[in-house]
Length: 218
Length: 218
Image (tube, rainbow over all chains, first blue to last red; front, side, top):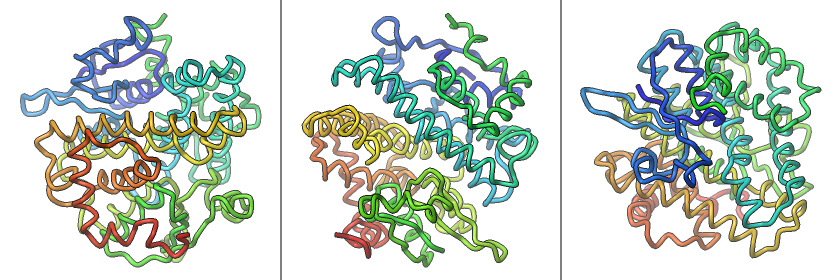
């Protein structure tokens, strides 16, 4: 498998964690979002992903190269095609809980703070650097506070977001915390999230997926 | 089942379509996002969903009321607990394709244009009405153009986004088109999307889920 990835992209980071948790070999193909006018906009990459967003995963199925997009769709695909270890629990109500946490990050925190959105704020709306950073922190802190509430009150929360093995929810949470720390968000009132983050980072699958461990890290 | 819904919320609209396609009875509990300072912020609703976003679905499982959040997690739950008719295809690569389209809308179009984000632009960043509407159209048109490309080039596209029966992708696409039209986005170069929209709207499941058909419609 080939993963088109940018070291700092948290959506790419999610898929790298999932591939590592599954123990699947993959080749990282770096797509630099800032150089060369943004390599994600090249005609070659747009053939893989018309959205011009990373990541994309290319897998060979029945001798044909198939390109998949959207980090959560990719991780569900990996979980269906390589079931061990599972990244979702078995019970539908628990699966919905884990997916709910993952989607809360993937829909309601991350896209609002994505590179292209921050650029639009600065270039089109002439928002100041301070206001841009306040925007980032607002959505990130508000979203993570909701997730802290959900995790802290739920008896299914264990060493990780759900029980004592990592799931799709952890694949999404840890990259979001890395972003939050880079932008100096205030996570002091989020002990559950920080505890889970620490637990994940002791695992090789998470450590090797981190931005600083990537071949294209700067 | 009880669906906490706002008639104009496109995330609620997705779940209404899925419930109707499955033929499942449900009670709509209106949550007015604008009245009373925003009913989604009430302590009662926040107990169901700390994110203070609609929809939330409450289902009784083994005699216990369980609240689910995030429209895509809810629809996957409905598909797992009520498999007929299926809202996802059987093959993992096809499931990833359908989920990819759904997530492209649910992550990369809709949240950037959500009520709370538009409010922040106006109230915190003092963005003009014209610039706010241009922001909306920018993300909506760009995102739907990518989806048009994906659908137009893929041989799996049929009467609907995938083949000839509606899937999760159609549950997401049709509410997004309704929003796009309300905000006067230019969809003239998107014939595949418009054709699929027309096909969906001939079905009762979609028509009855539309904002204008809701008990809280204004």
